[in-house]
Length: 159
Image (cartoon, rainbow, N blue to C red; front, side, top):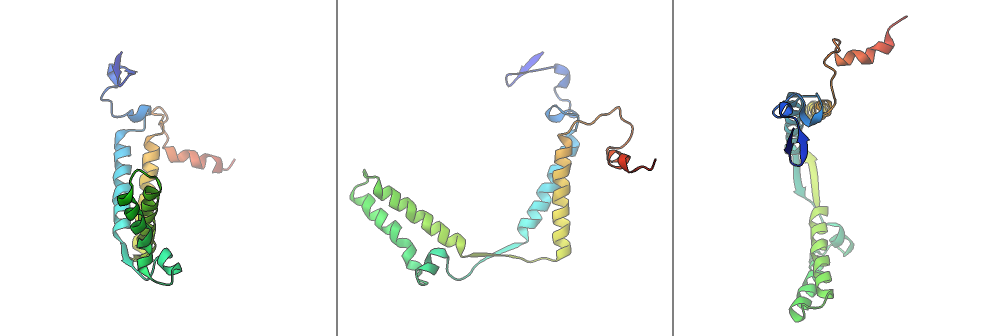
């Protein structure tokens, strides 16, 4: 017995890529699922176009003026230069930064620039990758000669 990271481990299981994570799912299935999920997620994110449009939430309620979002930050910075030992200028400055962040994020618009067939291919391949990752975490009985999907059809056989 050998100890790795405080856990007792048999030397025969070190470097055994068939029992990744303590199950017999296999490293190849995990890596294939990870690659499929990552590549399809990358293509999905790459297809999104981002633009800013109109006013954000705060300036929209303030009559369309964008300058009003900077007032809390301005008051907070003045308070910090006057007396930084007080808590209120730090809170007002933090509130000002949060208001500006919400204003910028709420004025963003996201558009997909792709065909439906491309979107379906990306979503299906992402789901397949996640399925392969989950399958690699499940123990597989090597002594059973029938394929794993055959269990789903056992209940459908006619008697």
